[in-house]
Length: 480
Image (cartoon, rainbow, N blue to C red; front, side, top):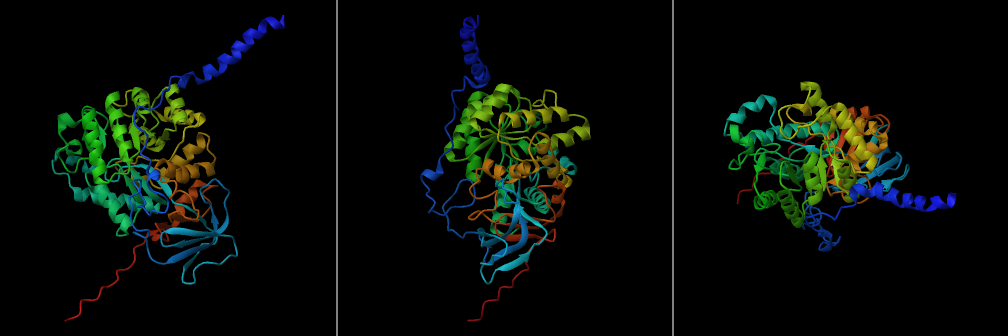
């Protein structure tokens, strides 16, 4: 009797893996070119800028002088290893040693910081910011054709300070006004202003009526006017215009390209192809069928916890398409207004349960996930609680507390394509370091007590306050 069933058992054994992989069986690879391989032409012996494009420049460009050591603290290094006692030595902008307790082989002139009883760890990363997004009180400028670039920079400065005081040492700005994010990026990198290092997309690229440009035709507000130099959104129509929009952000100095639904398959494929050919990764704000299109094109990451099919989730995991779920901002919107209203790109059920369920599904599928907050209007005022809330959400969907902090540091750096320089405290990495009064890998609330922060080896936060070195007088020229 059993012999008769053997063929059926064999068929079932063959069928089971087919069923399990049916969601990705028709995956024939991305339509766009792969991301430009800069390492093929830039060996490690060539010094480059500390940004995604890796432009050749002197090794100590923008590096501060001198060295310092953090002594007596508890090190959470972001690699996934358990916290341990250690001292960290920094020369210029680079971590040069991680020492065991009792070791003292650091430069004789190093500035010594005693951090006994505190945790030292990599700076946090926020993968989804809009540094210049209008405050609610500024909404009147929607009817004003002269939204100010200067005001945009000032909003950005204030939000950079809030992020830094919350322990965030790197932000990925995924759409801000005009040249403002590039100005802020340059001044921060040179040490002229205090705040997290900035990786910026420049303008959001979408179609007429797309996400971020919904009211453009009827109101004409400057946020989305292509002719306005301070516009936050760039409207494009057809594959050629989408390529051109990418090239414009590249020319300004973008580190990433941000696309938003709605679009055609041809448009998003053209944009991803153009970005990848220039060496820029692409992240996409999309939902439902537009996520399918983004994956098909070859996008590198997808923002938000919006609806997508099981097939899309499986393809994201298979291809390594990262997720930045930004759960906290949807939670704030839901609690403030009862729902996400008035948007043609949010035509589906969206509430606190659906967003967590989608994040949970991606976690179980093995999708790489990083931390981003999307704190628009006055929402940065919720920091550091908003960041803690996002970490707690990661804990809720299956991450341990330590794993959530790794997602906030190491994994988020990898999503930015900066994992070789940021995200962990290891020899050779850039010195983006925070000191916390407590054990954040055991209790996220310790992040309310970030006492000290170094960005690129520069002290930028001291005793919880923004630190700026005193002005050094330059002597007048001598009379000849």
